[in-house]
Image (cartoon, rainbow, N blue to C red; front, side, top):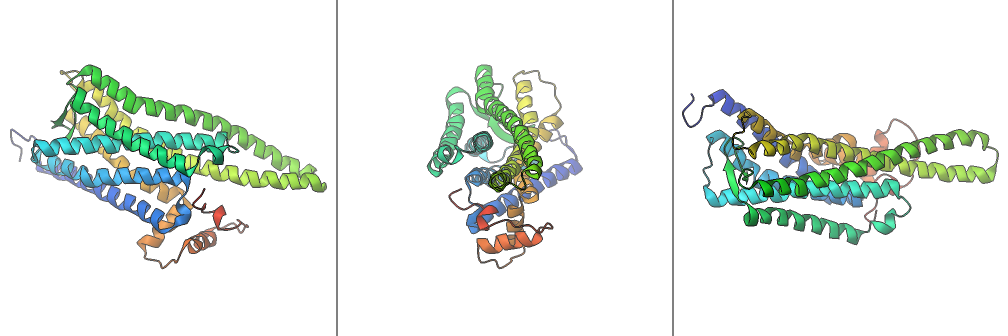
Length: 350
């Protein structure tokens, strides 16, 4: 079943097409669920979730506007849509991928401020600043894609079945592109999460000390009030830590999916690169898989998103945020008092 132009067997073609098809379907369905949940339940519209929204938009547009061309090309083993569409899909790939990278970098900054500077968080992270940052992310992503037209070019890479930057065209630009638009954001993200981890460990030790101290202070009313305030603060810290862990997993997943692809760029700088085509195919799959992974992570780790997903998928007739929270409370095994609605789903100003 092989030809001179396409050395692959029919089984290989079917396998590649099936894998990419599942990735595209999962990315579209998962990110649509996130967007629908954020639109339907205003209690999910937090400052952190504003970046989740931005990430879902970038992943969904990537799955809809660029991935289908890669699927068709992986089957035909050639670009059949003309040079103009090759340039368009390459630009879209660059914009949406860079938007994802920058969104994750700013999410780590937002988590850093929430954990390390909790008292100043509300003052520093306002709704206007979040909107400004999201606007900056998309402006920077467009600049990233536009720079290629000036300093390099887009081309079709047959072994990856994708139109992207011609990495071997200008070495200086490729190195600068990779460093500025990929490695620097991830270095910043890694450093910020190191600070977050260090602070989280300190806060955990302090909370443990508070619990031990409560036994001694139990009969002193004034100090008991202080202990109660500390417990409230401990609940807030725990809530922030859960959100931070989820975002850290999102960032870690992005690294696993994208770092192999970024490493392949350095091989392509050498015209005599001998790496097998299967490596480039797998790294392309991983990069695309990331667009579907975020929704899976939110669905598994975040109780509010998980319940919202269930509501949408099974057409449950919730009337609003209170119903979502009520059902979350009913699912909890531990019978504790969790306060009002805003303690589970932050209000729109948080």
